[in-house]
View (cartoon, rainbow, N blue to C red):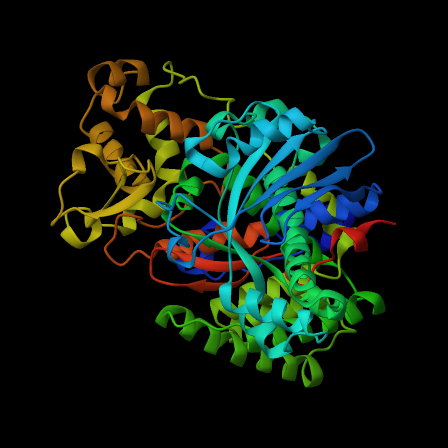
Length: 554
């Protein structure tokens, strides 16, 4: 897939340099975009004419029971089985150690029978303590946003619509605290479903689960309003409903993913950077694209006003973003010659010169938004073959391998791993919940359980070991003497020629912010309203302002 295939080759523009793109500060400024996973899912559902209904709604007056949401496509059907629970306020917690939730869910491959639902009812509410079968594709749970959920129920019960300001302040009726897939707790492995076109792009089963969960959150609120208000109760206004997403609380458990799946990370970044290069290389801006860009800019400006956080780093980013969007709007009105040659490239180069990283990454999203005909096909390249190249080529001479290492990993020379501050962190897995955690190397025990996520340090160690050895020997001979470097040698070989596969920063540094890694991944999901609650975990919203199932059906 070449960047220039849809544009004049003489106008082709190269994708951005990985040394720019793959730094944590920029990754931590990523914005959702047209090629984010949830947008890819919604376009497919619309294009293929999927049908949606709710064949089961067995919820009592306490808001307890079960429901089934069905998605029927051209070939296959998927169903979200939802269980609503009566959860005392004192038991409601977003922490991973929680054992009870307001609602629990499983996405089923096909249509579940009554016996299947009974089996799920005995397991899904237990979450990690239960077990699924290969018929289930995801497992998840969610809690009420108590203030907004109660407000919406009370208002609808009275025959009134909820306060717009209340909806905009929170943005969701329920938030998930985990959405598990890819073989966890007995669910189907990714390999079993990856060849299905509708699930080929990353996390499509999980995105479908969350999207159908969003419908459930509104349905359960309207149900409780009818219970409370009887004939006076009214349904939620469709415009207000659109403003509601599904919240999500996520922490360190998600952060190591991008390090452990470098080929997949390369695919995601390559798709995004190729899309940007295609748009920048366009020789002219057509009227429809101009209109779409202006509309996207207005929406981004409105979203930035509503996007709030109390985390100091995010507060600073939001301040810069609002100033950047104001400057961008002014430049578009008075300084941008959109009728000139390669106008989108000119706008990008202006942004590169005058906007912060936060503003630049937002501009990237804005440039892609109206260019569906040009870039949507790139979604087919978001996945990756993560198994090929696993075998180490031991016949390679050490001297040749060192040249490759020096070329692909020159960025590692920026770091000094004799500096205690640059090795202050270590990653490990907690014994209690089997979740990733961060420790302080100088103050805490547990380094014997350190996870191999410090890629930059591992490369530096490998480079030093190779430099002190026999340059004429093969890699096989080197690894026989020093087998501890096998993992790093394999990684270097597997990732050769993949420019966006590595985070080009030191994830062991004391100043490293895990939320930068989280934001990058969540932006590819399509998350909005990124709100760090600390350096280690965040709240976001999914599917906010996107259509509901009854709006996608043709």
